[in-house]
Length: 377
Image 1 (cartoon, rainbow, N blue to C red):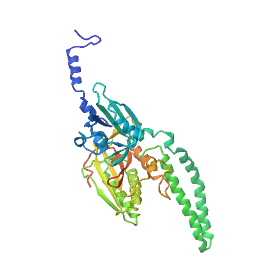
Image 2: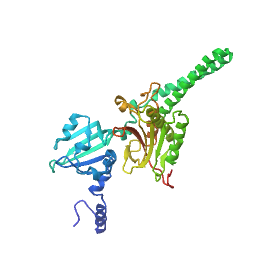
Image 3: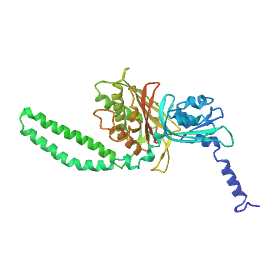
Image 4: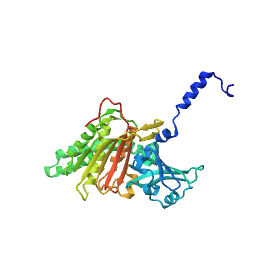
């Protein structure tokens, strides 16, 4: 007799049974999660960690297992620490700072006690930097109005520049310096406006498969050409890296901005100034792209590190916002432009301070392009 509400023959039942067998088991489901997950036993020790947890914490699951949660996860909030020490306490904490493997990271954290297994808990961690894309439509994070204003400013600027050039022709040689100052300052303001307009643009540049190492080396060459100090830039490339799916010009612009910032930061280092540009394949990383309505895999990682003093603690949460800069003459548009361009590529950018190594890392995570050969070196 068939089940109530079901109409079908033996073949249909067999097909359903077959599809049920193909359903992923619990282990496959946990491994596929895009956020970090830790299983904690009643003694507060880690019993299991998924691949995303390995990436976030920088420690393999084999080395995580058996270690105390508090030993691996250091929080800066006493209330969170107290809750983590309570085996039966549930917790939801948003935008908190943790120190994992001497690297400071902002995360959302949840602790879920397992009712049928007293003392056992599931801890999840999702890195804030990979969720920033969810806020890209927030009016507070865009500068559309200044971009429109910039367009209106350009016309009178052109007139001022033209007038300055005409005046320069009629002035005595000793006074021409003042006229050149006018045109130079107008050009500087025009360049600033161009960057503001680029930030306000809502149209993404077309993407195509690109060798990441070629783009990186081109950006390094550009930075070195304008750098009198010749800070050492070390390349640590994965030669087997596949192509990235990006706009080549936009990728180079992002890299120039990040490497230039690293150069400026490293210039004040106590040790020999050093920049490290590293590439690697990170198979488990993904984030939710609101515009696409799905999770996007971001396996290509490009890290720009410097041995400078690091970003001031008060500014760390705001470095990607427009007009925020730690430089005396900075305009605060370089990192804001990086964030805008990487979002256009459905990628992610984040930064962290490695206290133990004395390095500041800026990481780009980008989608993979179709593989037509090795990205190579």
